[in-house]
Image (cartoon, rainbow over all chains, first blue to last red; front, side, top):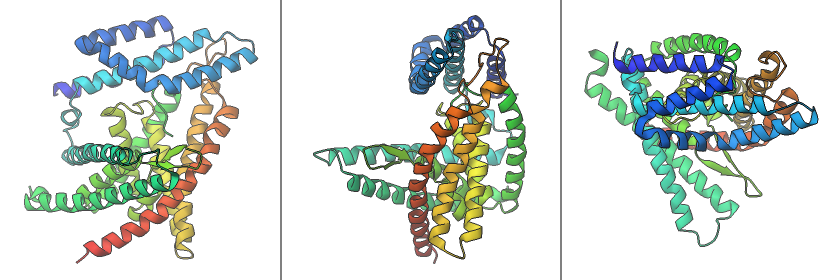
Length: 184
Length: 215
């Protein structure tokens, strides 16, 4: 079995373990081990994980604080457990992304690898194009764009993405056909 | 709309994985039946399209923005199973390549948005498409948002009941159905309106484009 698939299985096992452990101390230990495994990237993994969970967790934690206060129960154990678990799972995912080549881990299925490869590369292209559209609207507007302008910008972006998708699909189909992908 | 990692108990996500894996296998077999040089790249292209549609902000009056999902449009144009597979790939990519969503939330997100969202939209289109195309498209878009929102609110809201410790403190998502249903479903009733409009405009545009591309 290739090392990426072993790491994928280890990651899935770790995720399952994290969701059946409820002691904050063990979850904190798990977070420490995950960051240790991150090595030099530990700081960046933790920063990205905190940025990814901060808003949602803050909202849920504050809502639960209010609810616990209304019901006169202590919220701290629960909040510590929840936030540690979410942070640990998110850090594990960022560690997985940094260390594992998902395409190699899933190479047991040729079709799955091709679809994932094509979809991922197109998604990256589209994400860059989406950022360009957003920056273009901002740079060409002296003031904050109005509702109408933003609708028109979103509509133009969506139509561009639809058109680009169809062209990309046609091009990939021709490329696969010309290379005999379905006749190997 | 989709749930982040760490808020669902194994009692929820493990059975959901069992259901999702069965549906993925069946969907893959169905799509594979017609698998040719066109299907594979089109599936990848629709996946990338749904991925980017989720990034496009649709402005609402008052300065707020919502994000399209494109589930209704995909389901109407390419059928429920193709839309389900494309959405599953998007959510898997977001969870495992971009770190957004998470592996414990993946099956519930996939079932709610990919399966039930797609098939609710496809059903609306099938039932009403011949009677009034615009109404059918709008309803397809609206349902593709509202049905998953209800299911996600249910999945989160049942957590305190099914996963609490001996003292009764929740071990995962801590807020019950009385909070999750209004907090998640009500805003999505409005988000669905934007998605409904997107389905109408996107469908018309796609139809024109296909006619142009077909020799």
